[in-house]
Amino acid sequence: MTEVDSGSQGSSADRRFPDLRRKLVDPRQSKLPDLGVARYRGTTHSGPIRRFRGKETLVGLLLGLAISWLVSNTNGIPGSSTVDVGSSETEIVPGAASVATSIGPPIAVTPATFWSLDLQTNNSSGIWSDGAVRSFLNATPFTWFRYGELTEECNISANVMYGPNGTPVGPCAYDLTALKSWCRSVSFACHLVLPLPAENNNPAEDAFIANWIVHTVGIRPQYWSIGNEPMLWRHYGIPWANWSVRDHSRPTPLAYARQLNATIQAVRAVDPGARFMGLEAASPNDLPWFTEVARLDRAGIAAIGYHSYPFTTSKNESLQQFLAPLQSPSNISTTYPLVQADVGSACPRCGSIPVFLHEFNAGPGNGASPFGGSYANAVFLAGSVVQALRANVTQFTVFNLQSDSSQFGYSLLNRTDAIAPTGRLFSEVLNHLVRGGVYSPVPAPSLGNVWSVLTRDATRGSLLIVNANLTGPVTIPTTSYLRVGSRVHEIAWNSSTPGPTNSTGSVSANYTIPAMGILLLSFSASALHAPAHGSVSPIRSSAGAGLSSAPVAASRRAGSRWVSAPPRTVG
Image (tube, rainbow, N blue to C red; front, side):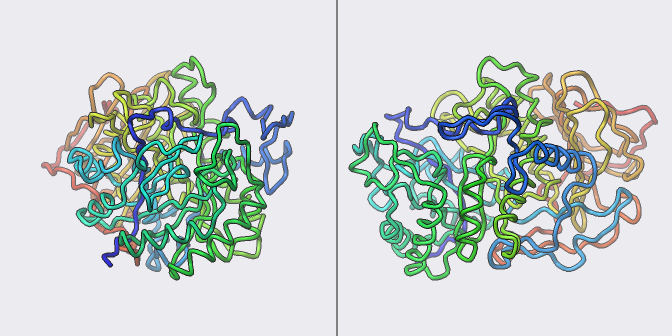
């Protein structure tokens, strides 16, 4: 058997059934106004419901807001020296996370598992057959991949997808043979999270499919994901061929947790070294599900995932409303530590269970915003990446790779392989973001909705600043941590430019980022003030996704030039 070690995917449906591609996400999904009223499965809870450690109280909401403020405006969540993904997946060499800088110690270390993508393509084999898709992915920082959409409907071993009435509607939305070919062709280690359909509640069927994938197709993923968003299922415990549009069969959290345990045992009989996602929750608000899975299945799972599509209003939103969730309790800075707390409180003696943010984009989750795929969406995602790095998110998964229409929606590419501004963000800007220690470079400006993070490894550093406000420019001083005149590569982008602009020159004392502007500076570690240029050990990974001491993408070099004191306006 040829073994492909890890990866992730995004499904693509048969183009004859576009309605099946609709992204179904719980209306509870991180919606800002729902702080007052939250709807749970046919019930309505009045009053603030953001819970903390299992309590749906106003105190919980205030604690959540406090955590959000700390992550966003101070030192964030301290990173641990080891990212636990089940079996020493990512190790930090001793000392790597303890290097002091002129702006303080690191608040996190970028996990080797961080960059992840839902690998959906316009046709099931597009990941291998579409050269433009392959070229795009080669330019991005993604090394982990999953499939999440249209996976419950798919019997991949027979390559049959079922409609909601139990009728076969065509082939599955993803092709594992194409995935295997692509993974074997890339220069980086391809890490996979593969789905096993669980809505049928048939562990023996899942074991059969897992055995087929490992021993017939020849792929052994890093993780198996047992079902996707079980809180939204309608055909629970019903075989595919017996599905009906009138079905309303849903599992309880306890029923799912017991099913998960049974499925883990069945799959391990055919794949003894298998590791498992404990849950793919539709929302960070799914406390009962986190609780039951952590309580009953901790011994069998390696991670827990949740999905988030934060938004303020689902119809006719303004640009300000579209960007507002970056500063709301539905942002990553708040939801991620709260999900960690939920999981930890369910099983306090279990040790930490890694939490993956396994689907993320701007909401709403039941259909992309009119701003989806636009430059505004790129700004939203850039600010969210800053939050994820500062919160020490174990895995940050962007939804998704490619749409099946001329519109971008949630996707980085459309069906004709045109690259959205969101796609350009990852292929032209964030691919230059150095992976390593994570630092909080500057206090949050009073202007608000400005996000910044500094990252560095043994030889290189980078500074990402995102000005997501509509009010005006923000000026960021750099003299306290960067040597003015040091060589720097600048990538600047704002709403008035057609795309990112690149230049090479010298570090300025100040940088002015216009409203809706993005700036990424890349520089040698020696450009950081002492003791910031002290030695840093690189990160290594037993799975081959370790962090190199080299930058993700080399910047162009030019002779030094000194700049005057006035701030430099970028973009």
